[in-house]
Image 1 (cartoon, rainbow, N blue to C red):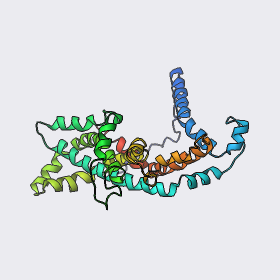
Image 2 (spheres, rainbow, N blue to C red):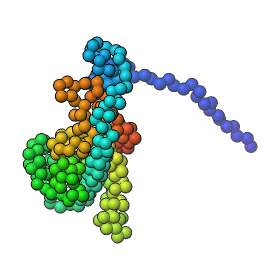
Image 3 (cartoon, helix red, strand yellow):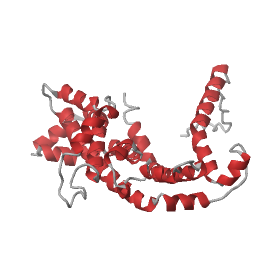
Image 4 (spheres, helix red, strand yellow):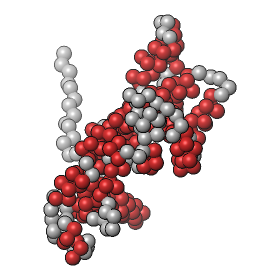
Length: 303
């Protein structure tokens, strides 16, 4: 007994991908996005271009010209503003402030997301309201409070909360916690309740549910918030100028004032200093870029 088998020849001709028609609305959209990107990048590119030119050349030929290329502005800015010392000051302020902000915000967000009680929404609104209040409105009361709160000599040379790293750390934590609580609480509410039910059956305490169940699952959100918080706290300028008086304690952003002259300002030198100050935040962003994007797009594909 014989059987005939039918074979089908593979279709070797791959279909050509159809290109989307170029519509006027699509052209306008691309032109608009390109214009926005150029407008966004123009100040940065202009600062870099200005920092690579000598003041004598731009004073003679103007800034809308090409020539006078030099790297002396970066060397002079680093030495004049003492960036090496002030970069360390920024580290002393930024790292503890970011870690303390994320820890406290995650604790509050865990309580709001996992426990049902009458003041749940009120507590979330209270922390979120801190981001809606202009910081300048609290300048006078905070300044007076900081000049009256004592600290041990080993914590502050001035023996006050004023003119100390602790003062800037606490101010940044207070103003940044609200945003982090809002983001983390919404993310924690999306976690499956079955995880916590299983943890409770296994006898896990509230602390273990927070530390060993919730925190590992919140790593993408924490990485995204850490990237934003490092950028915001590192670039903070207002409170350091108000709550500091000792020049050696200023963070690197406030040390840019050292590049301004009494009678005139060398814009080329200030541009070089600004580029140097911006480099750490760019490095941190590119190192945490994947985690940052992943944290922002969490839940975008959930149905």
